[in-house]
Image (tube, rainbow, N blue to C red; front, top):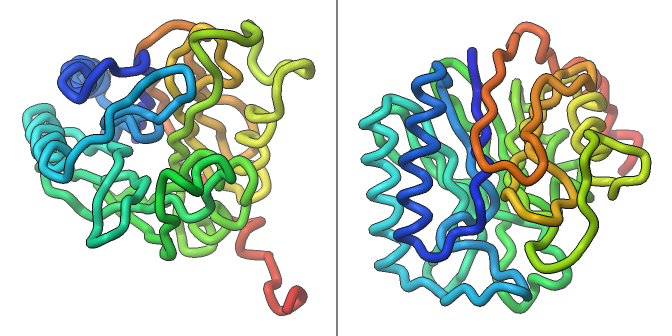
Amino acid sequence: MKIALASPPFPTSITDGLAVTEKLVKDAAQQGAAIICFPETFMPGYPLADVEVPKASPDELQEALKKVCEIAAANAIAIIMPMDWYYGDKFLNVAQVISAEGKVLGYQTKNQLDPSEDAVWTPGTERTLFEVGGLKFGITICHEGFRYPESVRWAAREGAQVVFHPHLTGSDIKGNQITKWCDSGSPYYEKAMMMRALENTIYFASVGYTMKYQESTSAIIAPDGACAAYQAYGEAGVIVADIDTEKATGYLAKRFKPELYR
């Protein structure tokens, strides 16, 4: 099976984000990908300190989701679309899962918020396993995938072959430019991606924005910790990789003995 990760520039609006979505989804579908994942809160865009992102209304987000569903159906490809989302009186950071037929299968909430996000979103409380085209997968969003490996282990123990990891690291305003994957002098993020795959014996697909000063890039990591594909730093686009689901055994995750930690 082929999976894809989209590394877009930061959206200027929901309308801009939808136009970019259509372009990158079409690119992934033409390369034979069965599913594509976008970065954290791509609709309407992560609330960065150096970018003013107007808070979208429930109606605006619902309409955006409807259009993403239409894009999925038109290209016969499943889409993971991270978004802001309203649920009752809660304002959530979620990743919507849409089938290749354009049906919303559900969403995964961000449950472990970064301390800087406490005043932005309400933390979620549940984890969900999804399946499209025979591929079982989980989702962990940014901070919780980087710093809370339990979120990935849960999915692996439940049978996930891949865990998708929409995130944002870096800035277009200031920082250092990375040129080499998993360089020893780079921030720890890419090392964490490698460990989430290796420590669970599954694929880990981490996807972020294309930015001038990225602190990590989008990458698909194999169950043995090898990098199967990564997006060139500073270049917007899509990476597509073949994954061998038989290698995603979850072997190490399933050997975990939770009774030892009670």
